[in-house]
Structures are given as C-alpha cells and as structure tokens.
Image (cartoon, rainbow over all chains, first blue to last red; front, top):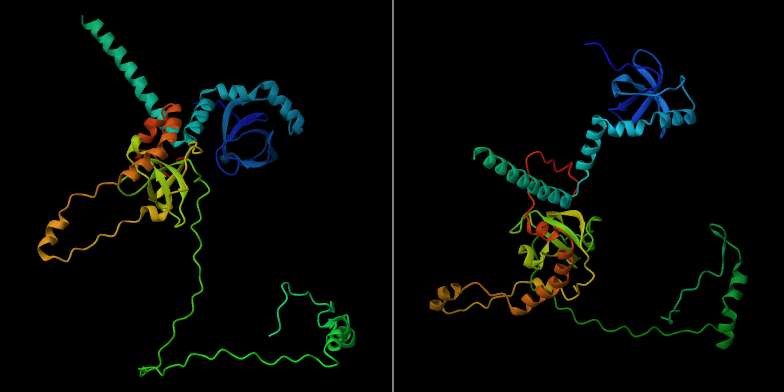
Length: 134
Length: 232
C-alpha cells in the first residue's frame, strides 16, 4: 500500500477541476500543505490546490521554479507529450475526447463498422466451433 | 402649398452653439434670396390664394349611438419580422425531424420560405420524406452538409403547399357518398417536381459512402446518449 507517485518538483499532473480542466501541468514549487505552484507551456504560472490535480507517473528534471524557456526545454527532453500519449491513461483520454466529438453521421458510420466487425467475429467463431465439434 | 423641393436644404445658418446661429436676421434675409423673390414680384412678397379644399363627402348621421362610451382599441403598428434562421441551418444541411409523421427521419434542408417555415426533402426515393414544410423549432440541425447547387428551388413557395379548397355539395343524399371518395391522388406535376429536385441530390448522395443508408435510417436516442452532450 505504499505511495508510488509523490508530489515533487517536476511531477507532471493532470488538472481535474476548473478552468484548465484536462491540461497537463508541471509542479514547479510547493507553496504550503495544500497548494502548489504549477506551470505549463501554454499557461501563466499560478497556484493550484492539490485537490485539483491528479498526479501522473511522469516526472521531469527541473530546478525549483524554472524560467518558461527552461521548462519547455526540459519537457521536450523528457518527451512528456509522447510518453503521455502512449500511456494507457493518456490513450483513454484521447479516445474519450474523440468519441465526444463524433458527428451524428460519424456515429452512424461507427455503428455500421461495429456491426460489420461483430459479423466477422461471429463467422470466425462459428468456423472454429464447427472444426472443434467435428 | 408651394411646390416642395426634391431634397430639403440643409440650414444655411449653421449653429455656433445650440440656440445661436452664425448669421443675423438681415444676413439670413439676404442669404435666402428673399430680396430676389421680392424683386421678381414687383417689390412685394408673392401671395398665393389658398387652394380650394376638396369638399368632404356629406357624412350621414349614424343610425345607432351606443348607450355607454365604447372604448377604441389601442393602435398596433407592429410588423412581425421574418423568422430568424439558426446559424447552423444552411442550404444542404441534413436535418433531423423531431415531430410528426416523419419523426426521426433525416432530411435535407433546401431553403427557408417567406412564412419562415423550412422547405425540406427526403429525398423521397431514399427515405420517403417528400417536399415538405417544417417548422424550425421541430428540427435538429446536424453538421452534415450536402451539395445543393444543382437544385432549382425558386418555384416553391408557401402557395405551392396550400390545401385545395373542396367544393361542398348541397345535395342531401349525395352528401355521405361524396365524403367516402377515395384519398385524393397526388397530382402528377407535384410528383415531377419531386423527381426534378431529388435527381441531383441523389447523385451527390450516392457519391458519399454510407450517406444513403444514413438518410434512410431514423434517428433515435439509445441508452446512455445524453442529448445535451451529443455533438450533432
């Protein structure tokens, strides 16, 4: 039951409440027991309550409160974007976003594709069953 | 009255401040050319005799005076504006009809008629929705658009869709039999209009994969679909 993800300088977190919902931010300093100073390449550095953050597995190597340029370089070096997009959590979020943005026509095409795939699977299954029973 | 000018003259006496003109009375007399008018008329201002008034028709005294004063209804000068078309509805948009016989059907929007109603077609061959008028409020606009440039919709207006008035037969015995006539057949020219409008639409639709099946299917809310979260 030990903790695996710690709040530390360089920890990448996901914002789960508020104006920046869904953004990946980096903890650049700890203000007090409840708040952290948080920064991201596309936002102004500001404080955020820990309750608004969900820690991820990704950390980057930065000094305390780096300049924006250093932060961006460190994020590029650690390749945060690709690591996030390849992680199962990141992939799930991308899929959720894609599903939410589907058009009515897209949803229809998706339905047709699902039916087609199910048909192919069922055919294979029937074939295997037949082979097995004979 | 003297003849009016075609364009009214802006004042020849500009305001220095509100209430104080730039030119004095004598200067204005000169500027307006009243001296020239007087000179033309031999030293006096021309006088026009009042034009004879057209004699008003002799009003008959009313036959009936109400016992109490009757209030006149208030004057209403309101002119209703044409219905504003939602920005998401443009010619060629696929609309989901929400009420009526074709509830759930996806139809193609053609144009907005002068009454504010939307002119819509299935196309008929694909989903059975004919050229029809539909109210904007009973429609969801999807973001799917169809190319409508090959369609000529100018001949359709509200008059095209009015019901024909039946001539009532006065005969007693024939009354019930006349009512039992079979349903009115759709006149051939309306069928031709439908075909003409749908021809180019169907060609475009068959060019896009799955679009024909999409228009033929009805829309329905399934379990888990939240309309306020759906993107149409």
